Length: 372
Image 1 (tube, rainbow, N blue to C red):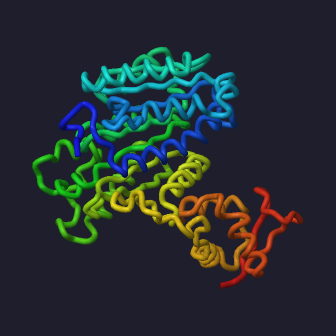
Image 2 (spheres, rainbow, N blue to C red; image 1 turned 135 degrees about the vertical axis):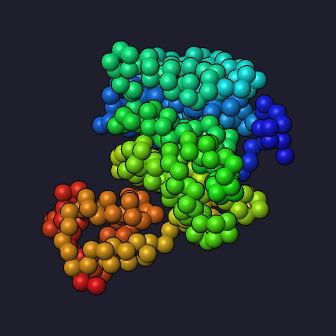
Image 3 (cartoon, rainbow, N blue to C red; image 1 turned 60 degrees about the vertical axis):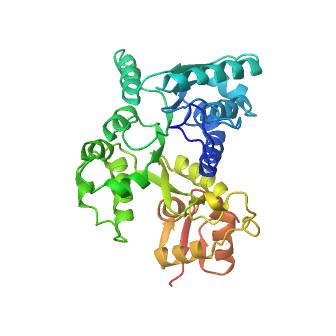
């Protein structure tokens, strides 16, 4: 298999395709929500910090083309671009990859006969640190703030992205992050002592040195949860959701971690992740790619969700919003699983009642759960 160290254009791995599907699904909801919905502010940015050449060795399209097509083919594209300017920033430091990326963008623009009004596409060949500093120095120098941004940060390895730069780039309220966490390398080298400087940049703390020894079953969780904590505490994202990618050998290769400050964003991303992991375990295995494993999974098992709700809210009357937040932040489930698929059957089973005359579950209702 041709890898990125062998050629400027390389083979695509199954987990990369899964990652792209998650991103595609998310952007399908993100563009209208940020471009024309209640979160709209007149401008949105899709930033790809490690864009690569934009194409794989077999012709499969990469993240830049996927993101652009998701807007250009969106049924609400004209409504979005009437209300907002949509800016794409594709960054690739490697000169050979960058030249191929430029060619891909030129060809795609020609395919569409131009990007159309209010769509701006920029290719940049800088390091990630240089990109962040140049972008924000220019904006903040004029007293402005970064527009709502979805940052797709997908580096090779663990050396090129620091918590400090993420915090600078994404401190604004409506910014979100979908980032590659090189768990395989972190797991191998976190306590080796020979790459501490790089890990200090990655984590923004030296606490990684306190990880349990190699082979300890608590080591993987410690290293992942420490990074998630830093994304919350240092970068400022209250909502962090990880998705595990498992390689052909059955070992965790990396995590894709989504970060947001809004429950709507978390809900949208969880729906995108469920599209790839229909059991709700937020995991994709390369060796299962292409196998017919989805039979019977169109109806997820929601009994665990009902049990969690009963256990947590037993004997209490709470606003619907509290139930909604609990489901999104404390369980694997999303909003599509909640009202009619879980609360409805629970009401029929007399496990809960509401103060609403409606048969549904309006956002303003209060829910009373029976004693467990």
